[in-house]
Image (cartoon, rainbow, N blue to C red):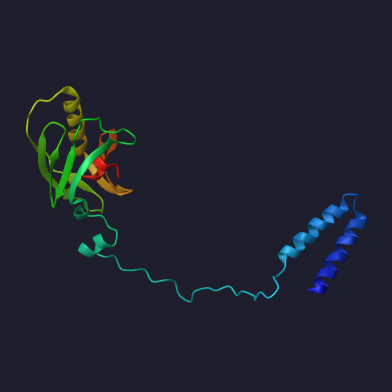
Length: 195
């Protein structure tokens, strides 16, 4: 260590004599840089390691086992959900109560004014689904804001293609021709409590 320090000082003095009046500052910076690049006292050299064989790729789970390991299925949707947003940042209007319940391959709920029910089928890929058409629905008349929200919701629900979860919320993504968007739901009870 002393030998290295001595060599660094000699190098710096030699450079300082060849350079301008700002050479001492440059020499000091060079010394600091050299000291930082060297091995630390008491440190042992580290040998790079390379695994002998690549890690094994786990087999793809199927059925119920897949749902437990992160693959989405209709079973993940079981229960009652409350619509909180029509797409990003557009909250459902005050006094509009839209719900969705999944029970196996059946859905039901309130669409703002009327009740609806129907079938749902899982797609081939995890996280995909389709809603059977037409949905059965009651036919009551309600004030215009409720009817508009109901019509918008049922049209989007009929075009749902995928589902996912974001921060514990259910996201149904729909597309119909050039139009598309998402419906955001909270578990029934969580929407009212603001969780």
